[in-house]
Length: 169
Image (tube, rainbow, N blue to C red; front, side, top):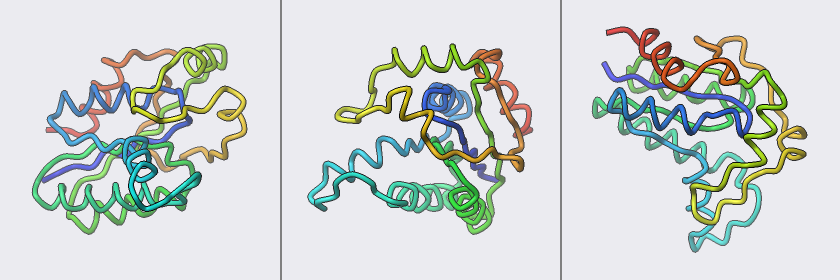
C-alpha cells in the first residue's frame, strides 16, 4: 500500500532537508510546496503575492494521482493549521494510502534563527522569509501528528530513521 508522509513546521526548521533525505531513503515522490508555488507565480496565470491554497491544492492533486498509482509521497510544506492538514488526510483516504503526519520543530530559537538567516533559496526565484517574518507567521501546533521531531537535537539521519520505523515494513 502506498504511503503519504505529510510534514508540518515553520520555515527554517529543516522540512525540505528532511523531505529530500526521506524521499531518497524510501524511494518516494517529494512534493515541495515552495517549488509548486514558485512555478505558479512564474506561470502566465498572472498570480502575484499570496496564492491562497493554490500550491496546496495542486500538490494534493499530484499526491492523490501518485498514491493511486502506488507511489509513496512526501509532502513538504509549512502546513500551518488544521484547515491545511485535513485535506491531506482526505487525499490519503481517497487514495487508500497510509498516512503519517510529522511535525518538525526547532525548539532552540538561536539555532532556528541562525538557520533562517544563513540559508539560501534552492528554488530559483523564491523569496525566503527573514527571521521577523518567520516569527510573525501564523502557525498552530499539530497535536494530532504521528511524530513530533525536534531538529535542534536530532540529526537528519535520526529523523529519517524514526519516520521509517513509524511507517513500518
